[in-house]
Image 1: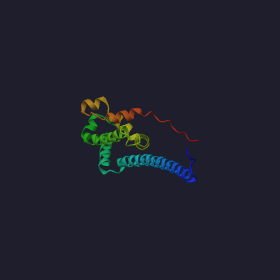
Image 2 (image 1 turned 90 degrees about the vertical axis):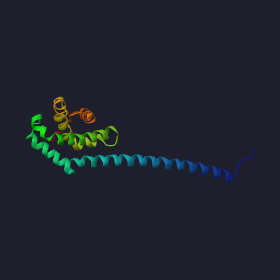
Image 3 (image 1 turned 135 degrees about the vertical axis):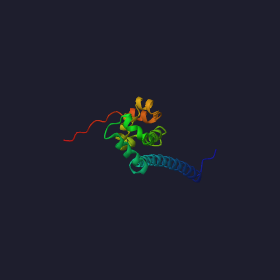
Image 4 (image 1 turned 60 degrees about the vertical axis):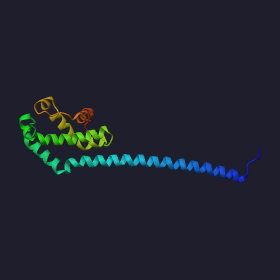
Length: 158
């Protein structure tokens, strides 16, 4: 077997270097696509959370619910007249929870933005009495997400 010439060796080294560089480009592209998807997930979650305070329909629903509750009385008698608004708000919040379940939205961002709203909505409207009296059913994803959230520790500043 004849010994390889310098051109054969250089061709082999160049081919190997090209293969390594191509592999590096593929890995870099994969990392960039992964990071871009994660960033898009964060921004789509922020936009979805912002809708709660910027959407005029949701704003009016929340306003009517607050008015009907007369502060903090979420009894069925007070809420009965605004059940359509309660369902609208719960449907919106449940859509966020479904997005979390399908890995479209970030649960951490939703919690940071809407924890008080979600906890209040589930604790006040997703009770057995509401389900029985007002035929309010569903919202399994919303309830499951709320139940995963343990109370956060209070931060005390010195």
